[in-house]
Structure formats: structure tokens, C-alpha cells
Image (tube, rainbow, N blue to C red):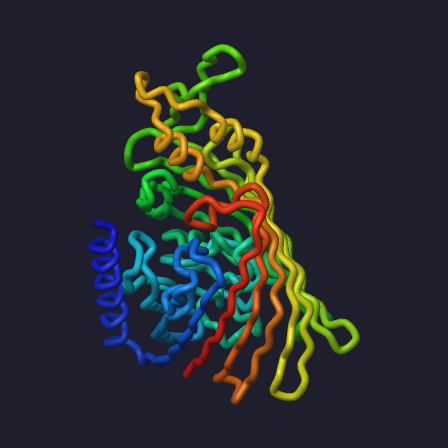
Length: 407
């Protein structure tokens, strides 16, 4: 249903655009971008949906095209379609409608946009899929895990202040979307996708010095209503005596609210470029999706066409105690609580306890063609929902190579 609605929206959108072009002299521009990326790990447990010791092209590969139309100095339109790994099933490539919007700029310091746009405040949020625009082989998943979930259908109002040294923008956004969430059940050894209606809004403040310096802070609040009617939010436990307990029926809610905070900076320092970002997804009394914090620090240096870098990233969840309690429950088949159900319940919790070191480089043939190579060492603590399967207190090496382009 969602893909059908998106297709109809895109058709109506471009009918309106081309109808306007019959009455106006319209300038059109076509551009494209893509990544052919391979990744392989030294572990048979699947990481980030696709990466294991068999290797994959699914995790990073994509291709996109963008059509821009300029009607007047004030009015313009943009539509972007990306062919990439699907967000509602595994091992399938699907076209996805991204930036598709009408823009109105009444003055140089005001911009109004309506359509499909991005709500997030990460530094690379708007150019996430255009790999040639940054040097890291893969943006750290500890922070960018939810980045693709910020595409909303709504409105954006941007105000810009220009000074001699800095440009300051404040972007206020409100919108709605249908979002798919992937769950992997360790006990059943299978994944499933659940969907929900998300309504959200937020503010993003950006300060740049017209060159490489950039500072950004963002805030958003989202209300999620699951399509299945109710969302399990609090676990209950039934004592069995002698310190043992089993799982009881959880409490449910019809909606949950998540607040997200963003902080980021990109600063040149003595020939190096320092990039750091942090994000916090804050929920209240939601055992299945507890509050999570992630951050990374990247240091890079341009040496001719080469740009070597090193990155450290970490993600931590304020819900590991609850996860441990679920894992420690006793199976009571007579009450319908099997070990498979316990394992499934624990693994479907969005908890993260991991850190990663990334050492890599990019090589730019031209400003629009770049090869990237990276070695990443991820250490898993008690649990990380980025892995499909039970893996704890282990190191996983991931090797990545990609070709990135735009035209």
C-alpha cells in the first residue's frame, strides 16, 4: 500500500510540475550518484542486516537519480529516486522515493519546502546516500543506524542569517511517514518487519564559516503508532520461587513517543579535519526500545588524492538490565513460555552495547569519483541488536571496499 501511494504521489507531483512548465520557461537538471560497495567479516553472525563471512554487496551498494526543475528565481522542484536495499524485507533491492518536494524562496533568507524531505540533524543527513561527498567508507552505524528513518512527508521552514564570517540557518520541520522496523528473533532464527505511522517535528540549527567549519544541533520528537494496534512497552515477570521467575504478559500501549537530540561539528585543525557527532534517542518507560546514546570521533587528513582517516564510535543503551532479566527468565512450557519465546523476546529488544574502531582511506580520481577502503574492528559487549544472533564479548573484523561516483 505504501509503495502504491508513493507512486501515485510521484505521478501527481510531476504532472503538476510539467503542467507548470507549459506556462513557464523551466530549467531542468538531471544528476545521479551511486556506490558499488562490498563488505565481508570474519564472523558468521550477520552484522548490519547483511555483513557476514560470506561477503555482501547489499549493505552499501545503491544508485540514485535526481531531477531538478527551476521555474523562477523563487520556485523550484526536486525529485530523487534511489535503488537500494529494501526497508521492508531482506535481500531485495527496491526503488525508494527520497527528496521529492516543491521549494519557494520568497527572499534570500527564507526558504519554504513541501513534500518528502529529511527531518534529521546529522551532519551527512542530506547527502547520506551520496558516498562521494564524504571520505569514510561507511558512516558509523552507532550514530547513523536510524538515519534513513528521517524521511518525512511534510513542511520545512528555513531561516538564514548571513554575517561576514558565518552563515546561520534554522530549519523547522513537521511531517508524517510510514516507517518499517526490522526485528530479528534469535530463538526462531528469522527476521520480520513491522510498520507504524510516525508523526514528528523538529528544529535543526547549523552554523558554517562558508568553508569546512560546521556546527550543528538538532532536536525532534516523534510519535509512533504501530499498525498492529498496540506496542509491547513494559515487561512483567512472574515469580516461581527460589529466585526463579518467568515472563508474564507485557503491558501494551497504542503509541510511543521518542525524542531525539543531535550534536555535531566538523573542524579543520592543524592540517587535519576533525568530525564528531552524537545522538540520543530518548524514550520513557518503553522496555522494548529503551533510551540509546551513540557518538563517534573521526580524524582525517588530505594527502594529495588520498584521505586516510581513523574513527572511533560507540553506542550504549540504558536498558541492558531489563534485557538481562528477560534473558534470565525460566521457561515454563505449561504456561506457554518456551525457551524460544524467551530468546525471541530478548533479541527483539533494541539494545546496544558496542564500540568500533575504523581505519581507512579514500582515493579521489576526480571530485566525482572516489574509491574507499576500510578495516573495522567492532567489539560487542553484552548485546548489540545490530547483530542477528547471540554474540557477546567478542570482536568482529569487517573489511570494506567501494567505488563511489556522481554525475
